[in-house]
Image 1 (cartoon, protein in one colour):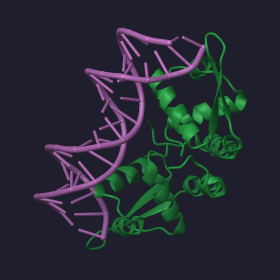
Image 2 (cartoon, rainbow over the protein chains, first blue to last red; image 1 turned 60 degrees about the horizontal axis):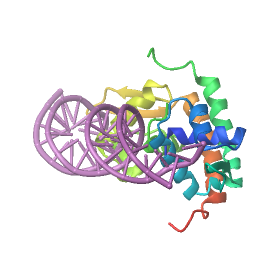
Image 3 (cartoon, each protein chain N blue to C red; image 1 turned 180 degrees about the horizontal axis):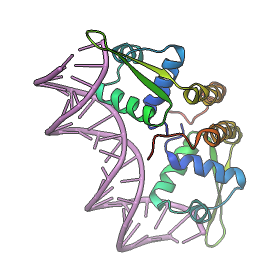
Image 4 (spheres, rainbow over the protein chains, first blue to last red; image 1 turned 135 degrees about the vertical axis):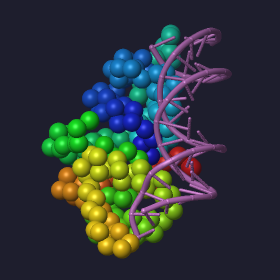
Length: 93
Length: 93
DNA sequence: CAGTATCCATAATGATACTG
DNA sequence: CAGTATCATTATGGATACTG
């Protein structure tokens, strides 16, 4: 359901606050337009986030997490905890 | 650090019990030799599992989780919990 | 048993140009 | 702003044959 590495970052970012497409791009750093749209469409299809369009000029779009998406945070936290505890341990490289 | 979809299954399987290469293959269902070795080497490099060779004839090898690997289970459990709760919700397909 | 080595198909991602 | 469309590149996974 999560699709790719960017999905984690997107979820984390939207957990922090709902935001638009280009805003997300900037906050995510170096994701490409295609990767971002692919990820967003995928997460929307799985109802992890929702997309709302406001008919302003130019049009504005807001992405935000659903309840399902917000609850995914528990997994991210668990991952972070494990990651922080063990990040140092790998063979050389 | 986890590398791919098979890594989850490998960790779960080894959590259940340490085992050899072909034993793992059978228990994992339809993983190919290449995918399994790739995954095992990767997880070993990240010290999530260890590989022990016994000089029998023919040689036997045992894969088992490290402490770091065993603690990864918390993440798997969290994922399962979330998955079970939300598995039904997606748009049609 | 426990792999390695190759080759190949396909999937994932990125770069770039263009649009309402 | 919020994308779509296309092409190129790279990463990943599978099939197959062979080995100590």
